[in-house]
Length: 185
Image (cartoon, rainbow, N blue to C red):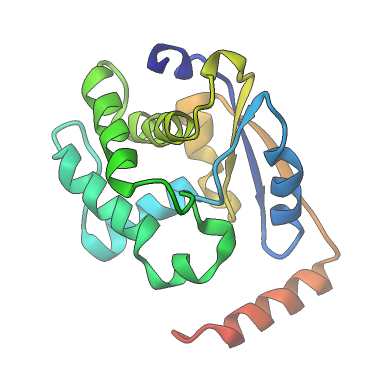
């Protein structure tokens, strides 16, 4: 099953904020030929690890350390846990099993860039834990909340894009509300 995932095309949905991307995600989510995991913002998470943890992905990096930090960010971070749209695993699914599938994929795949390898590994683990047959998947859709990581998808996947747009006034009002509700600001 893992051999197939690197050949599946990648599409990215993104926006500049508060434009209905979560709604679009929910529409795509039910399609049987689309692999889309809950709102991960993969490259934004990697940027956070670089800035906050000084942890850089390179081919010499320890995969287990990266995986531990990334899974802490995905599964234990207060801001991530606050929102239902970020919940990747269902109640009966194990973080340990999810991480085991990721490590198996990482150890199995050679000759892939480490960022691309982690992206595919997370999607592979999600498919594995949810019993999704990758032979039926025609596209992997990645949900990035901000568009400045689109260049990385272009670099690693030659991705296609769906960029959501909305009346700028509504987007700005939504951003102001979100930031005013944020405890860190």
